[in-house]
Length: 69
Image 1: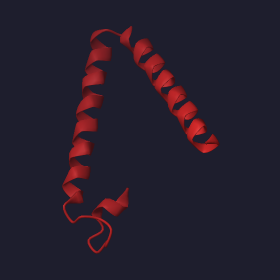
Image 2 (image 1 turned 180 degrees about the vertical axis):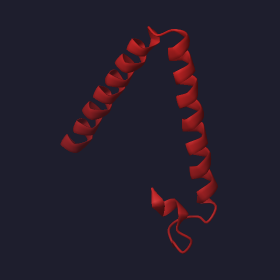
Image 3 (image 1 turned 90 degrees about the vertical axis):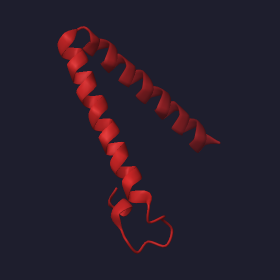
């Protein structure tokens, strides 16, 4: 991830840095919102964890499919 902040990289746009920073901001805000939602309704934790496992499983299957082909 540190390659976003290299100044003399020939293959990256010099304006790539702020895009990486805004993605950190968005991920941080999403984490805080998920945390507040879980505090408000603790049963949401089970759904969030289940959704994570489903997403991770689908990602692994798609990576296997890409490597196979």
